[in-house]
Amino acid sequence: MEKYFKEKEQEETEREEMGPEETASYCRHYAMCKIDFLNTGLCASGSENCFVSYYPQGRMALYAALTDGRIPLTEKVAEIADDCDLCGVCDKQCHFVTGMRPAKVARALKNYIDEHRDQISTVEVNDPVYNELVGITGEKWCSKDPAICISYANDPSPATEETIPAYVILPGDAEELSSIMKICYRYGLDFAVRGNGSSVMGFVLNKTLVIDMVRMKDIELNEERGLIRAGAGVSAYELQKAATERGYRVQVAEPAALVAANLICSGIFSTYSHAYGMGGQNVIDARFVDPQGKTFWMSEKSAPNLFAYEKREVPFPGICTEVFLKLYPRLPDERGFLVPFSSFDKALEFLREISQRRIGLAAGLLGGEYLATFLSPSTELAQKVKGILHESFDMAFVVQMVGDRKDECNVQNMGYPVISQRVFRTLVLSLPDLKDNEVLVHLNEMMEGDSVYQMLADDKMEPLIETVLQPGPHKLAGAVSEDLKAFYTRLYEDPKLTDLVWLTDFRILSSRMGREKHVVPWVVYVPLDKPELISEINNEFRRIGDKWKIKNDYGFITPLDFGKRAVFEYDYYVDQQDDEDKMCMLQAMKETAGMIEKFSARYDAVRWVRYTLYQGFARMENILYT
Image (cartoon, rainbow, N blue to C red; front, side, top):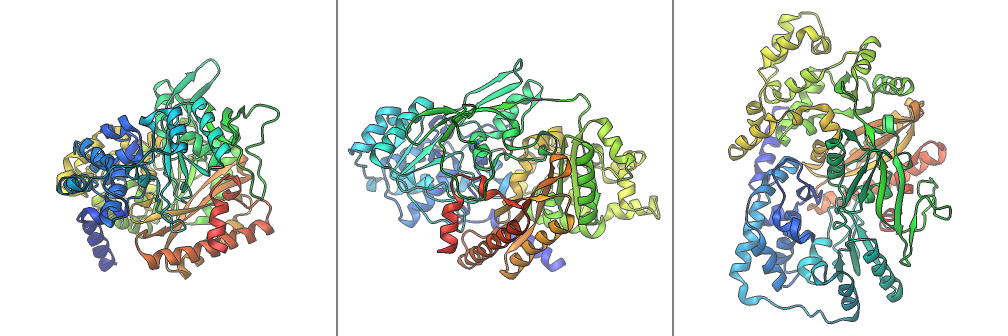
């Protein structure tokens, strides 16, 4: 075990010491550099120009393509490089998520341009399709320059290949989008619709036209009607922030995902689905532009049923330009808490019971990999914390909950140990100490014979636990490199970063799930009243992952519909630059897809999220099976 930890620590060091070429090649495309989730500000160049190439994510793609000779050095490349002021915000954001430092790539890009300015070329823009597209948005928001197009050409998925589009366009409203679709229809142009490009499964690429929806940033909250309107360019983080500022909550998912795109692709599910439901249960209305350029509303009688579930590929209905979602009130005594389990079966039993009894607002059964990775600011610390949770605390699984005072009391009255918000904060800000087990020694000496669960859940022990552990932001910051310690200390002085309610609402920690490797999630609806079936499916995921020697782990389960069913996620991880790892992943994906279909054929309640997608999985099926 000690050797394993040393290897992980070495991997963490090597990640920070990667050169600009390697750093650029490992961008996860999670788009977290496009939202201000740490209150550090945003890349000024990206915010102003909107094309991905102007953001840190795009500069990574640009530099990798230039050094590989995949695109020419154009005037636009030089403009993008010169527009970066090397402020360093991207280093803080990306390190928080992936442990990488993209500022070195931005610096290397500038140096490359300075050394090769005599080789700058121009791009011929005189073609009829481009001229018509520019006539809709203006030259600022439409491009065929390789410097722009290359940042829409790749994603980390092992099932996709580089596909440089001929054009990229950023419509500003539904009317412009309608005109674009009419051109596509008239010329027979293929197109892909892009949200923030944070699709972990890929399939947001197209060789002809990419329509980036990011400019449609309008948000409007209507308290009287109990709804919030989000344009197609609004991210989950931005929408939740707008709702929170007015005392409300909205059902959203991953922070960088654009809400409209996420809704239409997978129905939006989170741990709040326990109380708020998912998909159409949160939608009041939505506006679309169909492939012929016509506008329709989801509420129209003639509109397709976008949230019907059928085990077949469904026709592409149109592009969502705005969505009206329900607002939910916040309670004055809301709090987050954890319910730990050593047994998967016992945790499932508890999850179903609280769903049937409607206890709590949010509930999710997390595995040790998720919990340790989410909480730790480094991969090396996460691996050690996972070991402590499993081996010393016997916390193989944790149900993370948000509710009011009565919900917390109800769980305690059911006989389950509850780790309070106060103890959670203490543990997080003491993580580097937990790896040495000093806390266990002290607690066992003070409460001989009692389990760690009982001690952590005893409210009378809370002050004593704090005294023993001496939590503090500086202590957690000790897990990162010297030049980032001051930043992490200031960051964790903000109580939001250890507030389970805030973390559940904004989900910024879940972006860390792909820190070690790019994550490929499998999402399946399962019957919660058949725990033995869920265990069988979980074991099959593990068997296939182990068979193909890919990193894999249980993700989470969130209950739905009063305990009748649940959303279940299992995760595979792939080194996106390792050809052998990618080939193993493709084989595992093929076998896993067949496994899910077999379970789905046997049990009607087992349903794969692929059938809620309008694009993507049909292409994936062709890649895997032809």
